Length: 300
Figure 1 (spheres, rainbow, N blue to C red):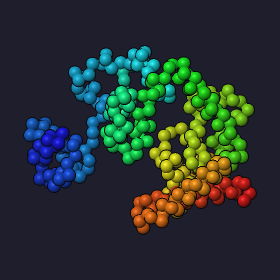
Figure 2: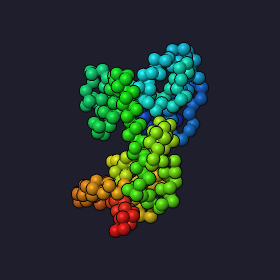
Figure 3: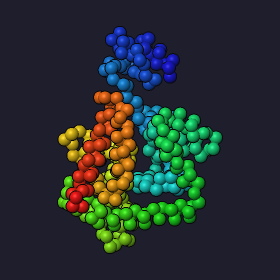
Figure 4: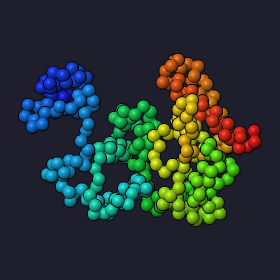
């Protein structure tokens, strides 16, 4: 890919050649035989064609019959990902994406027993080892005996159902007031455990633990809430508001105290004006929001 990128730069227009000094492995097409010479904005990173597009553009590259989901494929996929959408059905063609190759590779490398955790982390370019282990953990799920897996999933939903019932208690408060909390818990019945388990299975309600309490969003959160609480408590900026999907847990006060201690320690060595210092200060503002809301709810 480096050789191809270098070759393409040799035939790039003069104005593009200056920008391409720091070449990408996947670059614009400038080959002399190219029917459509690229005339786009060369200062932008070239977009990569989606994996699924290759099915349409190159009809002989894949055999569609080999890409159809078999009952055994579906069984293994649901063992690895119980929340797999209903669109994945036996007989349908697998929807392909580049990220699937990365994840499948991680799962297979960890399942093989031949690739060390350090090598897996290097291949995936992860900052921490824990990220790589989380990425490839599905290999162990596929090795679970089926009955054990069924019991595990059922117990998981029962536990989630009990956690959902607790959200209606005074222990949890919304930084946006009682009205917002009522909107979040409107489907939750503190008495009907069976109904709560059903809601959890359907994904109609969510209860994801975070440092400040729980997140009720049913969508993946790009901000985390475990390793960074800046967005959860509205610490992103001085006048920002807490996330509308968060419920503060008054019993998390000890964990928040520990976090605040760590933030103060790291601020001592953080460089003035650095992104790290801004992140730490943003999290401190979120901690202050948590204390203010929980203290007010408890009459402090």
